[in-house]
Amino acid sequence: FPFVNSTETNDYHIWLIFTKVSNDSPLTVKFKNLVYNLVNVSLDVPIKFHIIIDEQSKIIAQNKLSEVVYKLNQSLTYKFYNVQECASKISDIVSVMSPFFSSKPGTYYSDALFYLSLGLYRFAPISQKRALLLDCDVYFKRSVSVLFAEFNRFKPSAIFGLSPELSPVYHHILHTYKRKHKTTFGEFYHSRAIAPLNVHPRGFQGYNSGIVLINLEKQRSSKEFAQIILKENVSNITTKYKFRGHLGDQDFYTLIGYEYPQLIQTLNCGFNRQLCTWWREHGYKNIFNYYFKCDHETVVLHGNCNTKFDML
Ligand code: UDP
Ligand code: MN
Image (cartoon, rainbow, N blue to C red):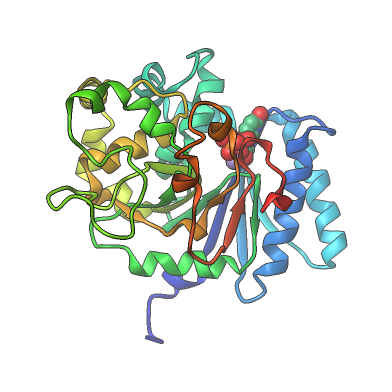
């Protein structure tokens, strides 16, 4: 419909995390390639970049952004956010989550990196109603407007939009729980229902957080979200599923998928087509491909675990 609120439709806020890098880090190359790719492929919409940096990475980011400006012969709109300032606004979330979802809970600031997506609503400017948070190791085949259009398909209760995890990692993490409980959690996705009475009747692989759509407006006003990030709740659900993770925010999104599925809109796998095949060589050879398969059009490739984009 043509007469919709303009701030809702015209703002394409993209958040990137770019920290702990040096000039020759692989991440520096990925960052530059991604910014170039995003602008190049999204000629239909104006992008606003929001980049979370530390002081050293900021200088490198500035250099890379000017190189992109030169290469594109076009200006860029961007703003920097200091990671320590962001971290200080989500310290409650980090201390609740990191004992359960960090591989080795360590320094508070390096832990905070893994949970920024959950607390973005606290440091994003209040005028931002929706945001897209991206890993730097992604490649867009189509305009970001295709991904933003998914916001319009959110069920009314959804705060986040996420694509499935395309490995059996959550089958692995749930193995103790699954020995005693019949559940589709951790099972790979079937195109036909395998269980009639479940919240994810076709199997549920969990979520990957390399691409996160966030309805910030809903998140800020959600009493339910404020409750579920409390320590008592996180402690209860991790105990229930005997869940000990190591993937930060995406472990928590996966648990939200089990207990509060109304809060997440499942995007199709083509919006975050992960390429990592690590689990195929680590005990899951016979079932890996059922998880890895993605029959949707690829909109975004995700070279996770340092996988090159040419592997598919
Ligand atoms: N990241 C960062 N500094 C680091 C490592 C990671 O800023 O030293 C950010 C960066 O945005 C990266 C994201 O965290 O894309 C997630 O890391 P990565 O994509 O390597 O993880 P994977 O997708 O392989 O699990
Ligand atoms: Mn990634």
